[in-house]
Length: 153
Ligand SMILES: Nc1ncnc2c1ncn2[C@@H]1O[C@H](COP(=O)(O)OP(=O)(O)O)[C@@H](O)[C@H]1O
Ligand SMILES: [Mg+2]
Figure 1: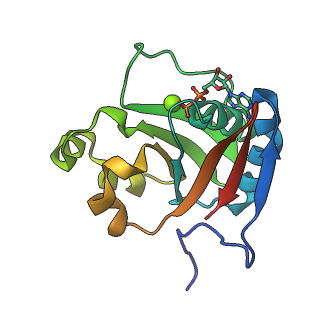
Figure 2: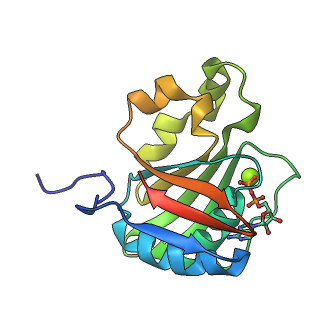
């Protein structure tokens, strides 16, 4: 098999203590080498866990030059990045999805076919049907006092 779009899964479950918003950079540095074009990473964790903060740290780690200009709320953001063949980071915030049919206009399957694309999903609980059909890894984030814990589940 010359190519696999599946995220490289380490044999143990890596976990991190993330004491501050800035500390997500170190997590992003560890996770970036696990990603391949086509990889899908689900971020689970409650409101305020740090999911969005992690996505921004990951985008920076992958070489995004700036945050994309976009309206206050867009379900799907695109970051142009440059990291070992990964050229596009799609950031889906599924919080407002009420029905998985709401995903259809986003054309996620089509978007993932574009070369170099990875997809990071906040609120994956909103789209269990879609995720069941798409190989992915999950980063579980828990609030731990003032800081956070994160683990590849
Ligand atoms: N590791 C961390 N330790 C402490 N505070 C954090 C950490 N990560 C994020 N935060 C803070 O938590 C708040 C919510 O972060 P956010 O990324 O918006 O969470 P989510 O997207 O999961 O709702 C922000 O004020 C952010 O600065
Ligand atoms: Mg968020």
